[in-house]
Length: 395
Ligand code: HEC
Ligand SMILES: [Cu+2]
Image (cartoon, rainbow, N blue to C red; front, side):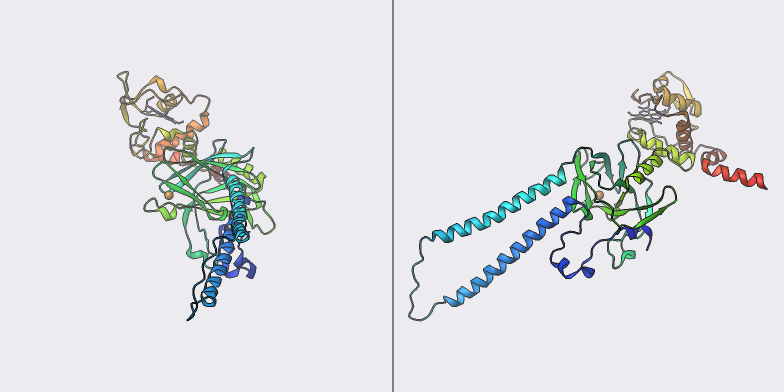
């Protein structure tokens, strides 16, 4: 059992106490989820009670007052005021309870308390991308196994690429959600929620994760140290194509300091220059207009851009190199690619020279025309360099 699965502790019926089998009401991990559970169990047992009562009475009456030889059916009474008041007032009380409790639950599910974290969630075939308020993007999707069945977790969703989203405990969160392609549905079984996500439209969902208590498992994290956490699986509940069943993510509830430390790390990405470049490009929204797979968008694709020749509206032909890229990003209007509008804004001041290097390194890896040794240079991991240096000094 890996660390991730340890964090997921669903209450399963096979291990539930006797009482829990009748009223499995408090196993959700949000206040709103618990009121949904309460409502469900209340309506269920109310219905069971009246169903059984009515069926028993019906059978009893049909026996007790069955037709007997020589007996005439009596005329039905037209009215019975006390009885009529009873069968009006009692159900009304139940319905009023259902309405107000249901409404309170609905409000808890749909209206975020003041001071909520607003994050943007993009759903697409077949994954999710979460952007925090500061523009940070959720950690890399990691190969992971998430088990929803304690009885046999290994068989459930073993080895899925699931992004992990960090949120602080007890902190209201609002997700503003939209889809890049088809209709998806945001489903967090632990929070008892499903919310549809549409292309060309926003829907939102709010939740406030419970505080982490002593039962929450402990994560040993190389970057930020040990901390308590609790994982909640996110799935897509709207059949959306081939890999629909693998469209998973994990909401990881952590102490506030850990959340802040994680955002700090997401904001200053690690890894090779090229990897950092990809993360920064994503965070700065370049992919809204540029593709990396050769398809044309508002702007030209980055695939095979580097070290290839293109025509510009001033009649020049330019081989794209570092200097051209620098100019295109800081002064996009200086040279306009033939066939494209002058629609890119300058990123002067928004992308530091250091970050520019990362983006260029990333673009190189996207180009088949890049000499092999150039590619190798772009793949260098600057954090690994110190180690190599020390090693060679010592030898
Ligand atoms: C609003 C859409 C839009 C966004 C966002 C955008 N670009 Fe552009 N980009 C364009 C368009 C349109 C062109 C072509 C016109 C031109 O050359 O200015 C272009 C051109 C470029 C070029 C030059 C391509 C060539 O063939 O010379 C580079 C490099 C570039 N963009 C990088 C970026 C980077 C890096 C980002 C993110 C930091 C970014 N773009 C964000 C629309 C966009
Ligand atoms: Cu989906």
